[in-house]
Amino acid sequence: MRLRQGRADDVTVYSDDPVAQARAWAEQGAEQLHVVDLDGAFAGEPRHARAIGEIARAIRIPVEAGGGLRTDAHVERLLAEGVARAIIGTRALESAQVLRDLAGRFGDRIAVGIDARDGFVQVKGWVETTATKAVDLARQAEAAGVRTIIYTDTATDGMLGGPNLSAMEQMCRAVSCDIIASGGVSAPEHVTALKALACPNLYGAIVGKALYDGKTTLAEMMAAAASTS
Image 1 (cartoon, rainbow, N blue to C red):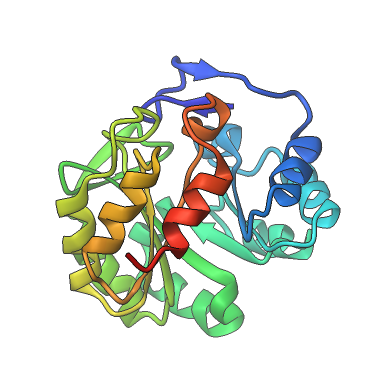
Image 2: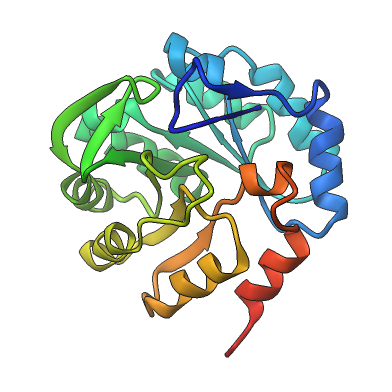
């Protein structure tokens, strides 16, 4: 399923078989799969770790997943299920020491998801906006040893209107670790625009709703990513 701007009351369900959907993306050439336990994000604890594990075991491409990972045990369970990378969100804001410990233990298997609106971090399934600036949290995460940040502009997420390019560039310029762009990336020209930012640490982009709605295809998006023009 997909949300619009992270709102739990604005949901579209596309499939009742996540494993089959994951296989379909892998068969179409996806190089990585991004999964969010939406129920877990709102509940504050994972609700679908087993299902995510089934997805990870069903396909041969790396799966990264998050949603409600608020304790070490939650992270350990998800990694034990076979995901390549666990995404820490709310907890990253609560404790720099936790980030240092997790990054020290798991290295590249930990990423921080920074969700922001108007430049300020949102937590607990995007229902709370904090006074912390997204770029400040990114710097703290990098200092703790985190090597990958997934940056979501929640105002553009699910809206199909393109990413917040200025916010994405600001984030990429603030740190040197890998940044994955999320929110509004819904057409090949959006990928081209992200590449035009010329940020060497802009590692990739997450595409969701546009693919499910048939606004574009995975092949078209990947071609734009691979283009040198």
